Amino acid sequence: MELSDLYSSKIIEFAANLPIIEPLESPMAKAHKVSRVCGSSMQVEINMKNGKVSEYSHEISACALGQSAAFIVAKQIIGSTSEELYQLRNIMKLMIKESGEPPQGKFSELKYLQPVHDYPARHTSTLLIFEVVVDCLDKIEQVKNV
Image 1 (spheres, rainbow, N blue to C red):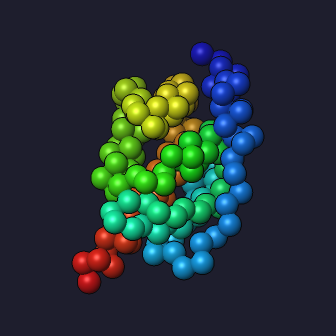
Image 2 (cartoon, rainbow, N blue to C red):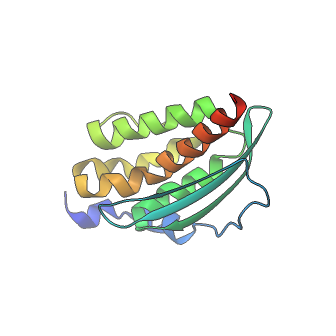
Image 3 (cartoon, one colour):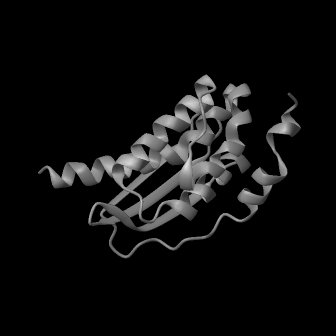
């Protein structure tokens, strides 16, 4: 597979349409991560209500792969439960690192990132959004358990 195959028209379309989302007024949790491999940076803010994501914001500075993953997450995250998002992170890790199956349902468009498996140097930036979202969820859980 050539590197140009990695950047399909769908990936380019997703990256080009990544929305600019203003920060939340008072987020329940905020998390920030940077990839040491490529310098991609993502910050996410989340509010939850009745066990589901009710508000979401992000600040993304990443390659097309990271932007594509962030686009799909931003499009589908509202209404997702913590359990769904932890499972999504695990499914994406398996898909990218071990050639696992892509997510089904509302996050099924993440299947377009399957070719990343063949490019280990791109794994971290592609998975960054899932790690930062889970970081937020962990922080919300910690507050609930205090």
